[in-house]
Image 1 (cartoon, rainbow, N blue to C red):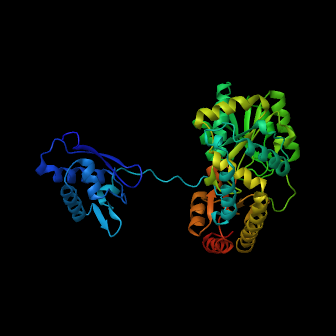
Image 2 (image 1 turned 90 degrees about the horizontal axis):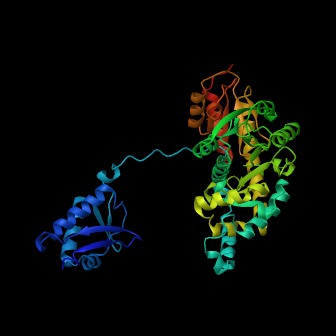
Image 3 (image 1 turned 60 degrees about the horizontal axis):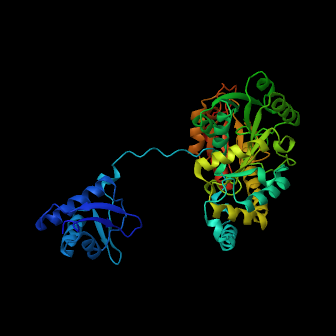
Length: 467
């Protein structure tokens, strides 16, 4: 009897395991003991609000007690507010004060940058069709862990797509599939560190998230200033750096396009010093007012590590990205990927491969480019109308732009005001390590409707000081 009285409560919500011990209690104390143990589990959060508990008969059998013991426990805890009985749905855990206040929750991390795509524009129907076809066509053998470098079909489709759309030199065997550019930068940093490179150049201003990933991987970031032509290669040449991360097609956050002369100078620096350039091509598919600018990698595949993802074209939630590597680094990065998480999910890779192959990605980018251009036009027009003294730059591509007020001001206060007015605005200084000579706001527009952008600028114009 003692063995049957030490049992596990197995919930019906999938995977709930809670040890409830009744073995040391005499029959008359079993109900009170069960009440106390379940109450403590609810208070601690082990049984979370909404958790469905086993039927009284099922739990009684598991515990080796009479059904009446469980019924009394459920009734008492329901009366105390710890449980609630739902008609036709059984008994579940209620929301209680002790549970909601147990353990301070860490604050939610802010959105990593203001260049988010619109979730409402995600091509759900087409993605679902590709996912269905991919699942139906996957051979049984592909349901294993898979190649850490990525599914062969996706690498083949990406090779063709990147060559056609971004002018890359990207044979499939030099592509490694990763979980977004965040993982890509982390893996590259680990490989560089293992090869003895402990310092890396980053654009200033530049991505905060990137600097965090590199630092967490053990590298020291050295800021290199950005001007109207891109990263300052002359400053880079005076350093002893042997690696640099850049966003040449649409610099984040200033929106500057790296000039042809600067591109050639950067590649010459890399070749002269046996250095590596890591190219973050994060939103180059969206171009509005200028001719396409090919990826830097196409000019120097021997010196450039290219990174891309679907975070801007489709959604950050998909967590699918890729690296196109110089041949000498493919093995090391693949090993690092395997050590990190074995491989990226096969079904997601197969779905993206189908999405590329059937032309759905091209159609989606054409549709969304039209929508994003309209949003950009609305934002630029409203700023020109309501805030005519403000300068607007970085508008030719991407999902964000940079605005500069005519007067020096408290950037943080201005950004907070813009956010209260409904704009997705961040102070430019947040992304810089050097002191800036002028205030600026980085404003994302891709995920906001045109009317919301109009209303935001109108509200902002009412409150900002005029020169």
